[in-house]
Image: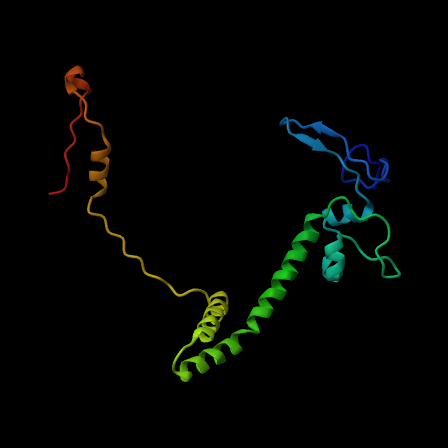
Length: 183
C-alpha cells in the first residue's frame, strides 16, 4: 500500500518504541495534532474493506481480530476504528432491545394479576413502576396534551418590550406611528 511518509492511512511498521507517545504538532487551526502509524488491518477497517459482520463481540471490544489460534496476540491497537465502535454499539443495543422485548408479555401478565388482585400493597406498586418502565420503552409513552394560553397577543408583547422615550428629541420625519390592524 505504499510507504508511511505521505499519508497516515498507509500501513507501515511502527517506528516508535513501545509505550512512547506520538509527537504533538499544531494543525492549521492551531489545535494540537498527533500523527500515528496504522497497520494493514486498521487501515482496511478505516477504508471500509473489512467485513465486521464476521467479528465476534470480544473482537469488537478488543478492536482487533483473533489470530489463527484464537488468541489476541501482539499489542492492542492504539486507537479503535470508528466502524468497529459503531458495530459494537449497534450489537449491544440490538441485544438490549431483544431483552426488553422478552419482558413485555410477562409484564402484561403481571399487570393483569395486579389488576385482578384488588388491593395494592407496596410490593405491587414497585412492580407497577417496573411494568410501566418496560411498556414505556417498548410501546412508547402515552401522549400528553398540554394546554397553552396567553392573555397577550404577539404584537402586545412587542409593544410592551419597547422602551418609552421622550420623543421631543427626534425630528418628525424619523418618527413612525404604528397602529394595530385588529378591530
